[in-house]
Length: 188
Length: 188
Image (cartoon, rainbow over all chains, first blue to last red; front, side, top):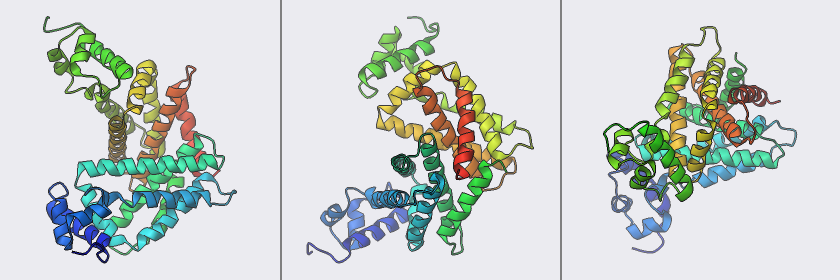
C-alpha cells in the first residue's frame, strides 16, 4: 500500500467511530480500525497516537477557536458576553458536523474512561477561557465564574442540540441557553 | 495488635495525608500508611478499599448533604437559591475542617489522576443536584444550568477559601460568590 492514502485520516476516523458504536470502544482494536478503513496499522499511527485520540484530536482546535474568539471580543464586552459570543461561534462550526458529533457523543456516553476524558477536556477549556479573560483584565473570581458557567452552558446546549431529533441550530440553542442562564442565576 | 483500635480511621487518614504530602501520593504504599499510624495493613483495609479512598470517602456524605438541603428548601425558593442555600450550609461543615481540607487539596493538586477523580466527583454532585431540582418540578435546561453553575460556584469559592491565608468564613465566601455570579451572568 502506498505511503500517502487519499483522505486516510477521515477514513480511519469514520471506521473507528463505526466500530466503537458496533462493538464498543473497549473491544475495538487499532488493527480492526485500519482493516475497516482499508489501510494499515502503520498508517493509523501516522495519524493518531492511539484509538482514544480519534475521539479527542479536535480538542486543541476547539480550545484555540474559543480562546481566539474571546480575545477578539470588543474591549467593551462584558466577560460573560465575550464567552457567550465565543461559544455561539463554535456552535456554527459544530452545525456542519452534527451527525459525526452525535456519533462521537454516543461512543463517549457508553464508556466511563471516555466520559472522564471529556470532563477533563471541558475543565481545560474552562481554564483556558479564564486565563484569556484575565489577560483582558478581568479579575478573579469573575474570570473563573464567567469561564466555568460559559462551559456549563456549552455542555448543556450541546447535549440539547445533539439529542433534538429535529434539525436545530446550535448557535441559537447557545443564545437561548445564555438567556436562560441569566434568568436562572437571577433567581427568576 | 487488637482488632479494634481507638480512632483507627482518623489515625490512618492523618498518616496517609502526611505521607502523600511528604513523599507524593504515587510513591506512598498502604504498608507505609499503616506503619506511620501504628496499625496493620489489615486494619487499613477494614476502613478503606485503597489509598485513593482515603481522599474520597467523604464524597457520598457531601452529596447527601447537598441533595437533602436542596430537597428541604421552601417550595417558593428559586432553583438557584435552593442550590445556593445548600452550598452555603456545606460551607459551615467545611469550616471546622479547614486544615485537613487544605492538606487534601494540596495532595489532589499535585497528582493528575486525583485531579481527574475530583472532576468526576464534582460532575456527579452536579448531576445529583440537577436530579433533585427535577424532582422539585424544575424543568430542563434550568435544572441542569442551576446545578452546573452552583457546583462551579462551590468549586471557585472552595479554592478561594482554601488559599486565603487568613481565617475566612466559607459560608460567607459562598454567599459573595453567588452574588458575584449574578453580577457576572447579568453582564455587569
